[in-house]
Image (cartoon, rainbow, N blue to C red; front, side):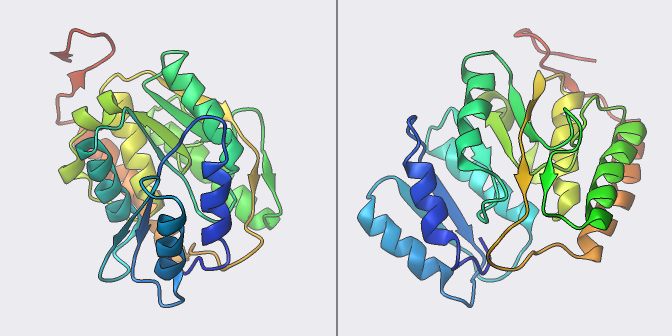
Length: 243
C-alpha cells in the first residue's frame, strides 16, 4: 500500500471475510496520508490476522513484494498471494487462485485479465491496448506461454518462493511481475492462468507512470538476453536437475 487510506480498511475486511482463512500482510512505504495508522487499527481489531511492515520510503513495488515473500516464508505459510489494495483485484478471486494451487496442483496461479479475451473494466481504451499489447510483446520476446505477463494478482506456492533467487530480482515496477513469471517459467514450475475481471480503482490515485511501463518494455529484452547464458534448475517434477 502507498497512499491507500480510502481503501485500506475495506480491503482488509473484505479479505478477512472470505470463507477460507487468509491472513494479511500490508507493506506500507511510509504513506504520508495515514494509511499505516488505519492498518494498525485493523491489527487491534483482528489480532494475529493482520500484519504490517512499514518501510522508510517509497522503495518500489518489486522490493516490497520481495520483502513480503521473505516474511511469509519465515512465518511458515504454504501459499503467498500478491494483490493490489485498491479493489482492482476482487478479493473473492483469491479463492480461485488458492484452489488452482492447493487443490488442482499448480505451483503458481495468475489472476489473468487476458486468458479469455480482454476482461478489463473502466480503463481508458489507450491503457487497455497498451497493457494488452505489452503482454503480447513480452510473450513473443520471452517465449512464455502466459497471456497476462504483467499481472499483479498471483498465488505462489512455498515451493516456488523457496526455489526462486529472490535476492537476485532486479526490477522494481511492472518488470518485476514479468521477471518473477519468467524465472518461474524457466525453472519449469507448473503455472496456470485463472480468468478474472480487472476493475479500475474507484477511490485513490493510480501509481502507474511511463517510467514503470518503460522498465517493463526494455527490461524484457535484458531478461531474455541474460537467460541465454544461464542454466536453470528444473522443477517440472519432484526430481530437480539442471537443464
